[in-house]
Amino acid sequence: MSTTRAAVVESGGAPFTLSTIELDEPRPNEALVRMVAAGLCHTDLGVAGGGLPFPLPGVLGHEGAGVVEAVGSDVTGIEPGDHVLMSFTSCGGCKNCRDGHPAYCATWLPLNLLGGRRPDGTSTISRDGEPLGGHFFGQSSFAERALVDQRSLVKVDRDVPLETIAPLGCGVQTGVGAVWNVLAPRTGDTLVILGAGAVGLSAVMAAAMTPATTVIAVDLVAERLELARELGATHTVNAGDGDILEAIQVITDGAGADGVVETTGSVAVLRKGVDALAARGTAVIVGAPPFGSEVALDVNGMLGGKRVVGLTLGDHETQTAIPALVKLVREGRLPLERLISKYAFEDIGQAVQDMGAGKAIKPVVTFA
Image 1: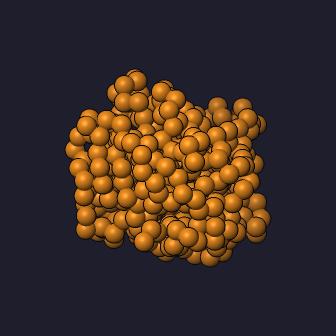
Image 2: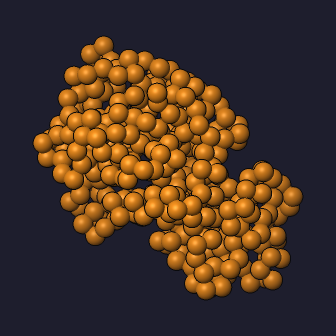
Image 3: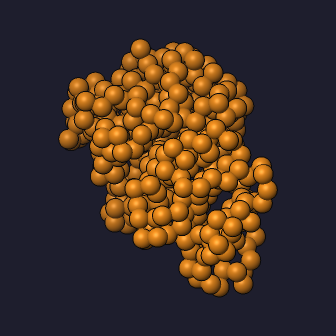
């Protein structure tokens, strides 16, 4: 048992407060990691706000980056001193895991988002002897040290500053995967990215590295649309200036979009995106509205071969995808630093406020 400082959410709607917690001893399949940086994601805010049934009080954080201090006896390929990124965890044994699609693991929800415990029900984190919700995405990285499941760990090169690549663990790989793994644009395709937050702008950057020739970014914030242009969007649409469906039809000369990435979590925006598709076009649902949300679709409009596909974490196999993305960041081809605002760990509350107010696209908290 060891102690560390963590940002604890006491109950739904409560702020992040710094508190001393106890970490369990590493199991054979776990590693102890000294945190260097952690990205803040809307999923963290959703859980902290009480929108998801994660057990609170608890420690969140799922875009961690740090240095390994100790490893369990069964951990292979990673040793103390290694630099690691942390992403989601998975069982490794179900059909989807074996097929290279761990984001669709049969036990993904309890392992990552809802359970707050190890698969055997034991807690990784406690405070004053009382278990706290932890094991969030196999990591709970809003802490100075984290006890991490080995399948959440990805070893990365030491020459890349960890605070510049922490967001690869969730939001960035999600946006990139929507374009590369699902839409897979062909020469001359038109893509529409609905929402220019961290996920949407990651999709824009990914689209700029494909044969798509028209990339349309849609948002309500003019500054984000300007950034989208700088990152590779060929056109932008301010959703506050009129109907986005009409704007897309004008840009495409009535042909519609070959692919749409919906990142906002708004079912109304999703419907607009599906309606904007060309025949045989695909809409990728990335943004997550509250559980139970439904959207009505024009059935006859779907008969032209349109597809609507849900996506989790870009459908990446992280051991392959994350090192490749790190290489793109290092070479300047994925300018992730354009999205990042850095905050000291003690200022995580300010990071939350700035993200909620739209002042920060991707807050990253750093640890001394």
